[in-house]
Amino acid sequence: MITTRFAPSPTGYLHLGHAHAALVAWRRARQAGGRFLLRIEDIDATRCRPDFAAAILEDLAWLGLDWDGEVRVQSAHLPEYRAVLDGLAGRGLLYPCFCTRADIARAATAPHGPEGPVYPGTCRHLSADERAARLAAGLPHALRMDMARACTAPLRFLEEGEGEVPCDPRAFGDVVLARKDAPASYHLCVTHDDALQGVTLVTRGIDLKPATAVHRLLQLLMGWPAPLYAHHGLLTDARGRRLAKRDGAPALRDLRAQGVSPEAVRAAAG
Ligand code: GLU
Image (cartoon, rainbow, N blue to C red; front, top):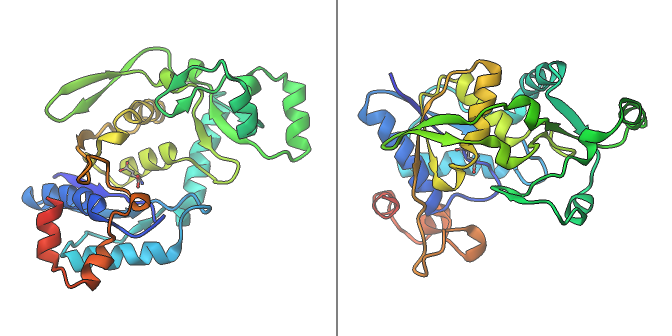
């Protein structure tokens, strides 16, 4: 049985681009008699808000989408992510990083990866004593994956319509798996939850396709199953720009307030 999911981050109100992503996942599940799950990815307390999460449920219901089982809210599961981090740390695959954004920006020689400048590994080279001293002093730190240790060969993931896609998470450098200001990163939580919830088909925007390399690595390290991926195109505005709230993409609730019907929104969201 196929299981799909829609996993928005409640950082704003849903717009047509989100409706498209939700509809793709929902239709794939319903057409196959499978399960469609809704997950709120609210691990980043600096950007997420409970009222946006509540609005997501309301907007999806208005749109006519139903989901199976309980909504999983990531912020209610922090110990589970902590346990994964502890396991990886116990295997020597993580290290604390005390660098600030400014420190990293100053390391101007850093090459660029899919998520911006690749971390130059400054804190990877700290001596054990220095690391222990900084931890004992309670200095804020992120946890980064020691990519060279964790990943010793290129990987592949299965993309619908393409087959096995070679990928190399080393292009990301030492990715952050727990932030200074958030208990776990998107990469960790999304991969953990897809495995835990038995998601067999991950549909999501093509902008997240590069990140799949990191997710595949986590799956291998943790012994989690690899779902099939189907990355879809993003809706764009009349100028060809990806729909985004900051560029004035109308929220579903604004369309609703203007009297637009759910059927019309579903047609527009495709
Ligand atoms: N929470 C992510 C977002 O809102 C999507 C996660 C995913 O589909 O993998 O961008």
